[in-house]
Amino acid sequence: LRSAEILAVGSELLTPFRTDTNSLLITSRLNDLGVEVIAKSVVADHAATLQAALRLALSRADIVVTSGGLGPTDDDLTRDAIAAVAGREQVEQPSVVAAIEARFASRGWKMPENNRRQAMVPVGADTLDNPNGTAPGLWLRHDGRVIVALPGPPREMTPMWDTHVAPRLAALTGAGMLRRRLIKIAGRGESHVDEIAAPIYRRWTTAPVPIATTILASPGQVELHLSAYGEDRAALDQVLDQAVSELTTALGSAVYSTDGRDLEQVVADRLLALGATVAAAESCTGGLLMGRLTSVPGSSRWLTGGIVAYDNSVKVNDLDVADSTLSEHGAVSEPVAVAMARGVRRRMRATFGIGITGIAGPDGGTDAKPVGTVVICVCGPNDDEVVVKTVRLPGERAMVRRLSVQTALDMLRRACGSPDYN
Ligand code: ATP
Ligand code: MG
Image (cartoon, rainbow, N blue to C red; front, side):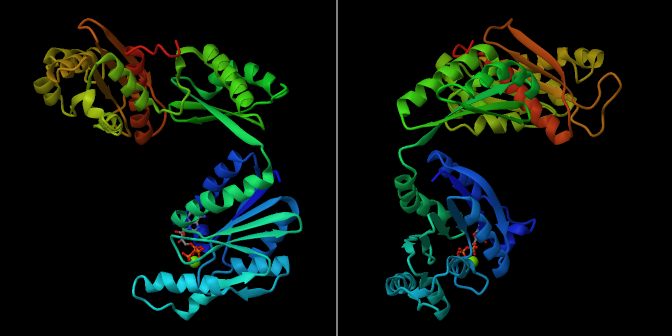
């Protein structure tokens, strides 16, 4: 069994207020088993639509997984739809009634009659225990296919997958597995990365152990996802490690992690290894950089503090930026960013100082300094070491602020040396 289709059942998932996330988790778990998801859909609580979706899924996928619609109310139709499509009667299963009654009794309640519906089981289906809710899941082998039905709430569905579904599917999918690697890159655009990476990864699609490569871009970051399918874990790992090393060599210092760590964590680990600390003075990012840095657990070991220097008087009085520097060059300028970085480094007694000043918009841009102009400085570890950069960032205010932080973090990473990938 190598292919799967997912049906996320629930009319609420077709409104703007709820998003189907279950299918993402299910997809990642299926991929771990080497199963490819060939289609997925979100289906309303509507009997005919649901049955049609199930029929279609069964016509093209080996494994059909549904989530949601197993509850006790009239709009919970998944169980009935599966029974109808598979042509099975439903029989009340006393052990399930007992389990639901016990669940209510443990809270001092009596089971509502409604909940009896959840004990109806299509003939031939196994029920899957749900320790976090009343609705049991279903496992049904039908026509050489597998149908798995799980409840909608993620906190019920996820443990049920791991406890019941994964081992059962593993027994059917054989020894095959998908192994993955992730390369994270900062400071390069998607097309730039692809230009370097494509000639390398293209060769792997026809290798004895083929590697599939996907490139994913988000603001300020590009990720290369590598995966290989097979039965020999060690062989897969070896091929993938070799592939990662080829790509990181080609991409150089733009690669900041190959082990899943995010940029702030890489910076944190690097600072810790150096026994160094950092402080930041932020203008247009208003503390966003601090927010990202302090999101790393244990950040107090390498972060001393920061100043949000929005008004020029704060730049002058709290960061020792000279009045003349401000009037001569303007608040968004390299001399001011340098003075901010130096000031905060000295005031906060840190090894590295960061200064960010820019125009996030929508107002405040000029011809010479349009919206998106941001100046970032990293100084340290020594007094005279300064790196300063003026960038023109694309997008709206939120994007400019986010990219400013990303750029500052990457400059800090480079300032603390990036020995792993250089
Ligand atoms: P219950 O017995 O709790 O009613 P159920 O199987 O009937 O279980 P639903 O009623 O369909 O589940 O969904 C319950 C809640 O679970 C939804 O309101 C929603 O918040 C969440 N949920 C359902 N499906 C999904 C999904 N695909 N992704 C994320 N959350 C979901
Ligand atoms: Mg429900």
